[in-house]
Each structure stands twice: as structure tokens, then as C-alpha cells.
Image (cartoon, rainbow, N blue to C red; front, side, top):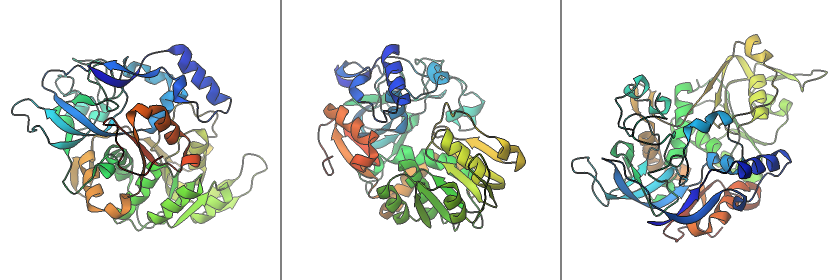
Length: 409
């Protein structure tokens, strides 16, 4: 037993955070959440490996949980109490004989808990290599949960140690340091959304949102050779600057509809009510911000038969005008977690693709982990991750070894 950050079910605290968000409190303190450092014994299912955590990133979904912004429909896919953290870089501590891993191997974790980690025969999705679409997230020899960090039992990355199935591990090459390796899961999620919808060079792309997901998308487009014009909508100047450094053709600060449309080659049409219409806009709109405003803007900014991809998670989107959806025969699709992707004739685990990109292009991903905070200071870590404008944060990681490998936050 060792200390871990533990999230326990508390409906009153969850609803309090949700109410504060609706009152305009953008950054509720982590101390309001049912989240505490306390002794926790992680259980190792049969055939799993033990891991010693090196770094664990704070994901946007972790922040949504603290804000009470998760969809109520997702409740069946978590079990309590759990140790948060699914963006894990770790050393293998112990491994079953013959599993392909040995103590001391440095790995990142593909956190999805599909049929194989659950000890079940593969469902059709898992048999296709798509565990992110598994039919059995609530079954098998594990408690319900989409991924590590949201399920009771094996633990998550915000602890000195946790467990993972051998099939979930991806080796970290020697030349890839922990600070970039901890980006593997968030980059894999961005690639899972981008690769099936990779744009033609003559189809302008709008990346709406310039947090870490938006930054990943811009860099992946350039690393993979896209010649499309890429326009980024950013909220903060440091996000705009990073998007331009990562390869965006234009990056605009909180642009209005006309400004965004014209940057992507579209034509703005004024309307008496409703904010205006756009003709001939982007071919691909990647929503990396989430929420109803982003979704509405995506529907308006697309050219006929364009594609809107929900990269960020959105639950309640509020009222929407869906007329562009039918008027322009748009395609709207989501992306969940990561599994495998086919790209340019090769099908591969998306996390493995992400690790390779991080290793091959250190110039593009060198500065996206902006803060590393000791796990014992988790309140500061979550505050830094949540208040991006104040701390100029992209990815914040916690170190359960109580060290830091980067500038102080």
C-alpha cells in the first residue's frame, strides 16, 4: 500500500462543481472535488504487469471531471474509487513470464480497457483492432471503465505505481525523453481523429482550439506532409504563437465568424439574426475545443460535403442551428480514445504511431509539456492545467517520484 491520488464518488461535490461552472467559475479549485492523497492498494489482475510511474499527464477529461462537466451518459463507464491518470510513462516493475516485457523496460500505456485486458474473447470491434469501440467496457474481470484512470482496481498514473495488461504497453525508444513521451496518449487521440479524415492539399483546414490537442493536430499535419492551408482559432496569445511555430499558416485570436471564414478562403454572408453565414469555407474543421460554440462554428464554416471532427469531448452542446448539416450535406464524426488507424496503406496501433512521431520530430514536440509538478502538489498541478491564461500551460504532468524535470510552475 502506498499513497495515491484517489477520486471517490460524491454526487454533492460533483453537482457543486457543475453549478460553479454554470455560474461562470472557469477554474474551480481541485480541493472542492472528492480527490485526496491517501493510502491505496492497487489490485493486479492475473497476467498483468506492474508499473512504476515516471510521469503522468493531466488530460482535459480529468479537468472536466473536476468541473462537473462530464456527460451523465458516461456514468456507467467508470467505477469508484479510482486513481486518476491515463497518460502514463512508466518502468515495468514486474511482468509475467513470456509476456514480452521485462523489469526495467520503459513504456507508455495505451489505456483503453477493451476485451483483452478484461479477459474476454474479443468482441467484433476488438477483433478489428479497435478496442476504443469495445462492446464490453462494463464486463469481464475488471470493474466498469473505459480506460485506466477511471476504473476501480488496477490504479492509474497518479500514484507511485499501477498495473496494465502487457498488450497495453508500447516501448519508449532510448532517444525519447519522458517529457515528450508523456505526450504519447494525447497525440494518439489527435491522430485517431485526424488520420481517417486527412485533408487533401486543396482543402483548407480549420483547427478550432489551440490547447494541446490543437497543437498536436497542427504538428501532425505538417510532420505527415500535408500541404493544406491550416487556420487555427486560439484563445490566448501564447497558443497562437505556438500554433504558428508548429506549422499553422494563420492563427487568429478569438476570431469572429467573418475573420475566420476569410482566413480559410470562405465568403461571409451577413444575416439579420444568427451571426452570419459562410460560403466556400473549409473542407475540414477539427473541433479541439469542445462545447456548443465550437460545434456551431464548425457547421457554419464548412464548404459543401465538408467534414467536422469532434476531437475534444463534448456532452451538452446547448441549442444548435443544424441547417448547414442538411443544406450542405456535411459529415460530422467523433473520435474516441485510440486504437488502430490506417494511413497511406499501413494499419498500425495509433499509440505506436504517436511514439514514432515524437521520437522522429523532436523539433515539433519539444515545448508542449510546460510544467512538471510533484504529485503531492496535485492542487497546484490541476490549477496550472486549468488556468491556461495565467500559467501559459499546454500539458501539465505530475511526477509521483516528487521530482521535477522542467521549469517550476
